[in-house]
Length: 146
Image 1 (cartoon, rainbow, N blue to C red):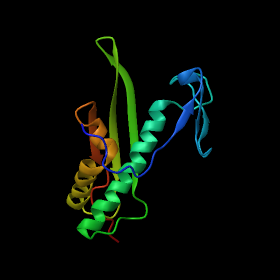
Image 2 (cartoon, one colour):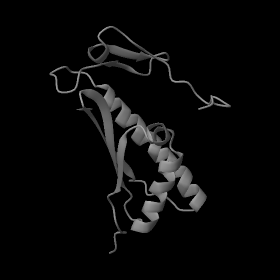
Image 3 (cartoon, rainbow, N blue to C red):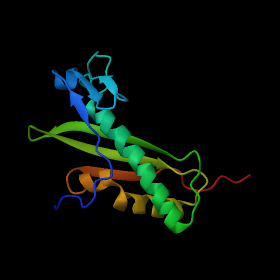
Image 4 (cartoon, one colour):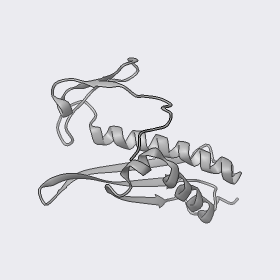
């Protein structure tokens, strides 16, 4: 894969000793968090939750771009529930994920077209494509009628 032609933004973080049980802070100070391993009693978040949050936020942005191209208004209560699993296969660690996309008030076919377009353009989706098992579900099927 070739390097980017134009860098639009660089997120910079520093994660200290402990890795999954340490701390992570962004260079601008906007992110300053404790980390805890999944399933422990620690009070921090974990890399899988951070990945899920980043991917779902990015995916909604990609849906916005797709909606603009398709001249469709996205509902204000659009939501993506991301689930990122950490597991093993043959003793090696892997991730898998599900994105459950709720597009209330939008016909199922239209919502599916938006989700498909977003999955093609979202940088997180591109990064995971072919590298992990991903399932994307449209969970709102039809517009609400009075």
